[in-house]
Image (cartoon, rainbow, N blue to C red; front, side, top):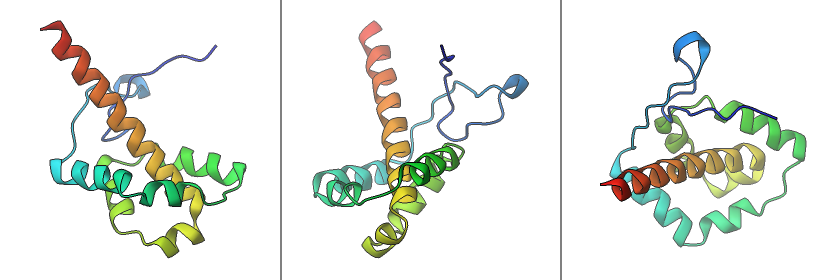
Amino acid sequence: MGEILKFNPNRQTGGENGQPESELIMPDADRVDFFTKFLSDGSAGKLMSLDASTSSSRQSREIVTSYTFDELFDWLEKSSENDWKIRPAFYQAVFEELKSRLDHILKKFHLENKKE
C-alpha cells in the first residue's frame, strides 16, 4: 500500500530529507475567482472532455505536480481553446492538479474552522 504524503501546494519539493512540506498556502483571491468562473461558465467541462491518451495524461500529471500554484494558474489563464486541443493531456493535468490543491486547502480550512 502506498504512503500518503502531505504537500506544499506551492512546490512539491524542499522538505526535510526530500519529503514534501506540509504547509498549505492559499493562492491569490483573483486567481481563485478566475478558476471558479472557469468552472461555472462551462469552459472546464468542454475542455476536460477532449480526448487524451492515457500515457500522455499520466506523464503530464507527473510533470505538473512539481509546478507552483502560480505556474499552474499561469498555464490555465494564458491558454486558449486551441492550446487545449493541441495538448489536451497537459492542460487537463494542469486543471486537475489545480483543482486537487484547491480542494485540499478548502477541506483543511473547513476542518480547522470546525475545531474552533
